[in-house]
Image (cartoon, one colour):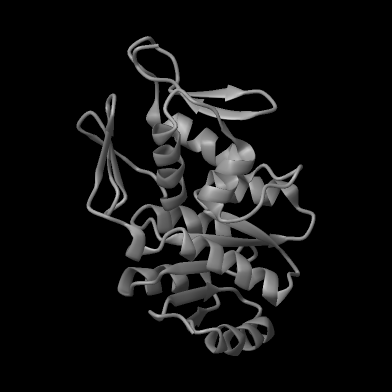
Length: 232
């Protein structure tokens, strides 16, 4: 059982699957709520506080991508996107729209549990301090997960914030895809997994360019990424 009960919201129109998943996650120590449409899920998130959202792509009213876009307009809650097995484009789109991770359906319940645990573990508030990280133009408030470039707040998801923090901490040094995936997503990197690439791409877009007109994050082909300081 978890020391502190985490609250999950499932947004999925598969009623039978939700009826099976709810008791399974409850036994694992989670408090679970379920909605079956995108709009109902959005309304629930606006009215309540959740630790993580399980969001299906194929919803009956508005699809998962539009639902996620609306969620991201007011919340940076962790979102695990549930996509169709083999539909690679849906996985990439989910990350582009701000999902923290994805899991193809049908999935094994233990694999789902592992993904949920991994996302929540690396977002554990018990290991977050009031520390402020300041490098070049960037100021990161680790407790609130707020990031600023000079005096402008960056609209980062929880995962994007973690990735920017790690890159800044490794400043001017390479961090491999394997290590970044493990530290930011809480799982092992696999050969054809592009999740970390998409997250880094989103961070690169949101952080813009330095005083020399170059992006802060450099891709070292086949190896990983590095944050390049303004002095470079």
